[in-house]
Image (tube, rainbow, N blue to C red; front, side):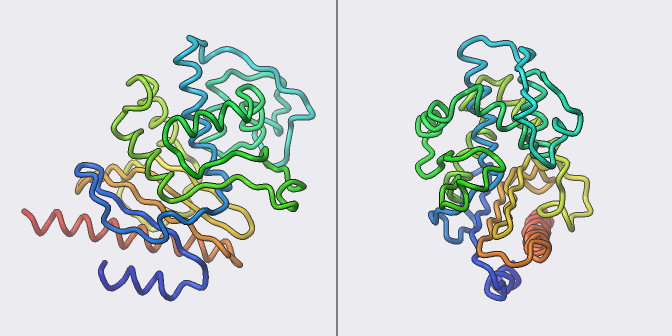
Length: 261
């Protein structure tokens, strides 16, 4: 890994941000541009997931409480929109928001919580540069330079606390990990892994960014990996690069375990 990973990072035509962290020791194994602020794309849905679960926990709201969905809320590339659903439970919306990155579900939850409340929660849990400033698919605001942003440090903070289950009650912490583990988008971190490993993760992509970050529960050790790529000109290439990096890290950690036997 000491040789292959620097080569992959240096040869990349894009701007690379990265973190690998041993979750059993909290040791940061690799970090690259750890504090740079970048467009979050759909990574913003992870702190939204936590904020909604915190709201449900604190206010004793039923996860199966049904929220109304107006046809004007439907956006393209959404399972909610495809089904023309006009109502769904909070639980259903959370699941769709994460496992297929459903933007209609996300926007309904943003309206349910309120953007100010969400950003206040982000600050309360220690996210210093994660800000929600526009709804999903609001390309007009994006064109005007208004975007949702985060950092590798903030994503590390979120997933570390989820792993240690110290942001929410154990049942809600377990639910958050369960939903992230049911992710259906596997074009990046899992792309080249042949082992049947559990990864609780979230992807994020726009024309110029591709990200994937999460917890890998491996036989060697549980670790956090996040690869965040900006200034992208070819999304397919960027996702392949994330896959290659993920495979190098995974195989290195597996080999390390074997060497210790």
